[in-house]
Amino acid sequence: LVIVLDFGGQYNQLVARRVRECNVYCEIYSYRTDIEKIKAMNPKGIILTGGPNSCYLPDSPTYSKELFELGIPVLGLCYGAQLMMHVLGGEVKKADVREYGKTEVLIDKTASKVFEGVSTPTICWMSHFDYISRVAPGFEISAHTADCPVAAAENAEKKLYAIQFHPEVLHTVEGTKMINNFVKNVCECAGDWKMDAFVENSIRAIREKVGGGKVLLALSGGVDSSVAAGLLSRAIGKQLTCVFVDHGLLRKNEGDEVEAVFGPNGSFDLNFIRVNAQERYYSKLAGVEEPEQKRKIIGEEFIRVFEEEAKKIGAVDFLAQGTIYPDVVESGLGGESAVIKSHHNVGGLPDYVDFKEIIEPLRDLFKDEVRKAGLELGLPEELVFRQPFPGPGLGIRIIGEVTAEKVRIVQDADAIYREEVAKAGLDSDLNQYFAALTNMRSVGVMGDERTYDYAVALRAVKTIDFMTAEAAEIPFDVLQKVMSRIINEVKGVNRVFYDLTSKPPGTIEFE
Ligand code: XMP
Image (cartoon, rainbow, N blue to C red; front, side, top):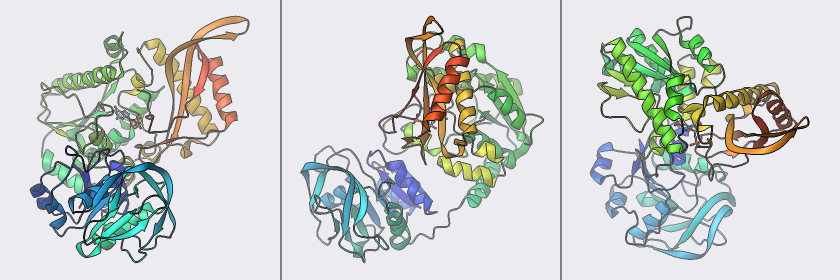
């Protein structure tokens, strides 16, 4: 186990992700985590993340000196690096110029264990306004840049490493190598954490936990809940009941597709129940425009529907959910990150839910790890590689109030977009792409008629972990074809936009 201590920076999940890419298991904890708890977990290494504060200010997140005296290797990144210096007697100051973006870093100590095999100069991602002006006693400078005298420093004897830049970000060309070097060379992790072990262990753990009990799973048909269903079905078969709520916010025809895979004619051993709750959702959402409120309504309604189903089924012991690690961290339950969006499958569980316990078999996995687990379970590839679809569905792809009419528009536009993207052979290249309906109406002309209709926004992103993303370059002729088909075939639309925003500063979804 490697522990990532979160100081509130935006790349913290990426740090964990990179460590796991080295087949080393790691978890994120808040910097507020007690030292005794850390000791009890007996980690092989600790990584301190970046963060938005200045470590020399009195109220900034900090950690006691003891952390660096445990004999456990510590790697400080950005704020974590500065904090390590500050706590151990070095000096951190505000810089005259903020260093931001791709920067050439010169390695001064090529024999450093973390820089093994790294070229010099090497391109790294910098993002800081404070800098280390003097290293702590016992440390030597191992890298610098034109503007930054200490891009990295280390006390190899005590296994303490400080890196000012962000090796976890892909813009740091050899960043993964550096993290791999730290966990393998310094922490001496074996790197044998693999998916088959995860699946086997999970099946065992599920059986142990569930015993002869009944489990009810919220199946959305998305990758996460499908993999959860596969895993649970493998572990406990018919003790599992999957309730699939068609909330009327699914992609076109998706309800029937889900039923084909998991229903009685599908290939899984489980009980499958489909609930058609469209009307119920539309009436709850009528007049509601605020995104967080929409998410809460959709989430709560989910829970209520399950509760009702559970009552019909009789005693149910566990409610299973396809929650994955980024949901947990983004909802502010793990680490230090602020609540960005309340993911509906984590937040807002009302107290009166009468299940004994929640079971979340994928809670520790990142998205691509979930896919690997799905393949390991023998789920069909088209399901495992299905692009992610958020729990609140089209509810958060319709900006502003949701109505049946708007759902129809966005479903039809999205179906055309997907069809054309697939025809152009681009689908396997894009990690997520969809049409959304803006709440903007504008004037157009069609035939000789004036129109005053909605604008559809097309989104397509490339991403590895969905924490950061870039807008994908879709050939212009494909976009044009999609635009012209949508405007011709979908009543109520007279304009189509393509969204160029990356994440950050945008998010992948619109709400
Ligand atoms: P954002 O919009 O936060 O989305 O950049 C990141 C990824 O998460 C998906 N997403 C959700 N998934 N429940 C989910 O299960 C949700 O409430 C939710 N909100 C966003 C989104 O589709 C993207 O893949």
